[in-house]
Image (tube, rainbow, N blue to C red; front, side):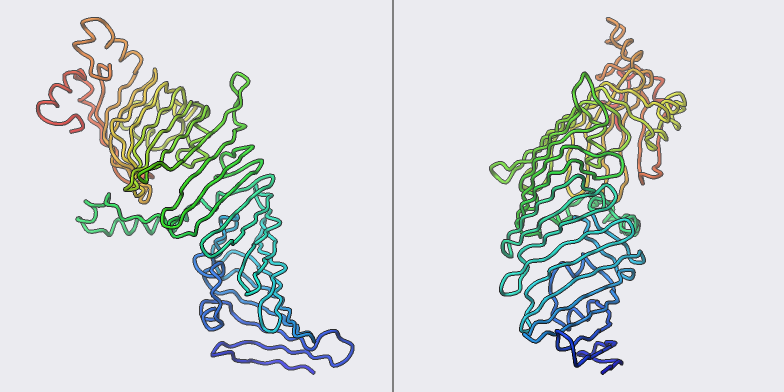
Length: 485
């Protein structure tokens, strides 16, 4: 018997194909249903499994379900879905695709007496990436274990186990040769553009108060989660990987990240026979405070790995900060003996200042700095620097201001001193140096400002300010206004 046509399930149209063989079979019946798996179907069917809902899945998935009914009241459902019309975000497993990109999903579901008893297999794939696993359920049909036995893709060869202890506690373990978490940390360009557009449309009052705390930590909404990752190589971006990586983190509902410890090393450089490394600790303290410490003998690779800055080589890095009860980080960054290269904002500043020789260095081997020190305050995606300073023989620069992580724009003012080595040498000459040099030891330094979008900020530069000794400018500013004015 063959039946085909259009059926209706609670207002949802289904294409039905039923092929029934009455002899020589080990099942009662088998039929196929074609439908769109979307928000409407999930609501009508009572599907409330969070992993199948936004933000993990958005859009419509054309789905073919082959349903086989057996004599002992068991049912087997084989599902195949086309993901091209849906956006999928399982980036914590390395899988993320936009609407319009190719992708398929498959799964086998077992039911007994109408109740879900097991999901013995599922798969998710797109060009160049695939993951396969199974889902174990409790007797009452709730998920207790998601075992992803194979995750393979660019820079990824791993497995993951997600154990649902109860509705408030989860345990995640990731292991393998390599694991690429770049999709998890990547922020969609469309989202960045949308944030910038909303910023442009702000009222003047909103713009003046853009530093007000209005950002909620998305980690606060997750259940209590223990995360353990141990892989040979971990990627957070395409530029650098950390090797022999071991990391643990505890997330607590209502708080977010409660504790974290990371350790690993970089293959980018060896100095004096020592492997470059990274150690990060974030630990709770009384009165709802937290301490953050980051130590590395390869500042450039560490900042790339942490997705803070991509254009530095070498350096010894030390970051110490305290998170207060109001969720504000107050700390200090110290870097020694490093090179900065191909930094567009810095290049534009040097170009405006007519320091073309330094621009050539910046676009080539880079500009060497011996010291960088910056006290900072970070809250709600706003980084504020107060009197940060960096210097080497070629140039010295100081600055104070803010950088918005959300809107990716600067508002910084400071001073730049060319030929810093010679500049400070003059300032060190007895009697003459004490008369001419400023507090930072330089004799001549020009005022600058950087304001606007990181891709093309407005650079302000006062060349005449370089003509008068720094000590004189400080004397005048102390009388008539602040140094940055």
